[in-house]
Image 1 (tube, one colour):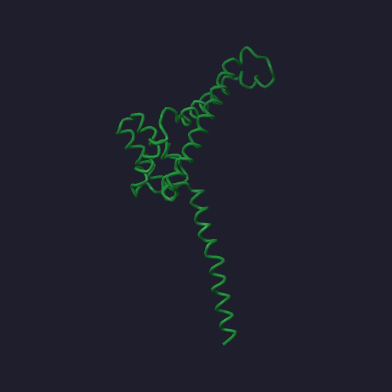
Image 2 (cartoon, rainbow, N blue to C red; image 1 turned 180 degrees about the horizontal axis):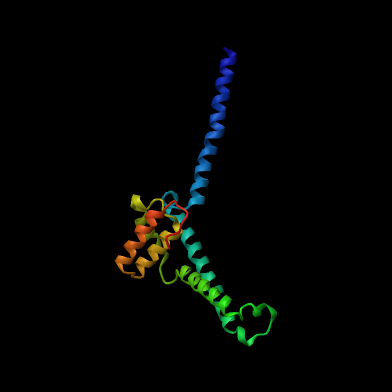
Length: 171
């Protein structure tokens, strides 16, 4: 009888020790995934802080990209060894293409945090959008606020839903 109580106590103890770890693991998985399920788990305050940090980081990246573009534009005036690579027109063309894409990707200015918050809450309220990653959702909301034509938004949303959870990025 004593043995049975000890085994029961051990099992209950193990459950109490490891059950919270599973909850933490699920929370960590959601943090890493950052999709609609993750977004809805955040408090309003947490969402605002995250959005502020995200938009601020994107703004800083844009400033660095602008400085980089200015540096490259003045490259012909320079003679340093580092700039010889940029003098190759093929390399410069690829660089400018990627730099321009990054510049568009990081364009989150002139929209209030509250607009992003309301837009993302509405976006993720639709169960079909739950698996769409935050990075894509916030760009969709940004484009919505900026007046992208509805037909283009519908096409983008359809593609995001189709590829949600997959490896390929919709845009």
